[in-house]
Image: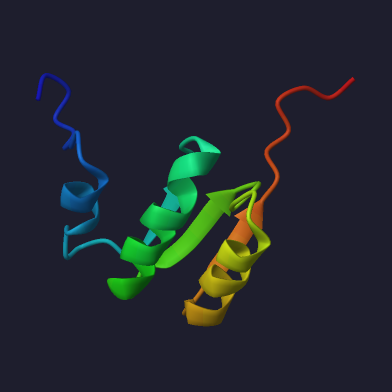
Length: 79
């Protein structure tokens, strides 16, 4: 690319990179669980912005299957 950075339009292609050790998920909430499932199956460490899901059973599934899953709260504005 113009700036010498790799990019992908499909998260699967990006996460298939064997040099990765982890991933930060900052997509829309509806996509979090699918990406977490794929990343943890690859053995990647995962940091996902809050919320992981709006469905509690999906959150439980993600934590039960994980090797390393961290949920972060990103503050957009501090007053």
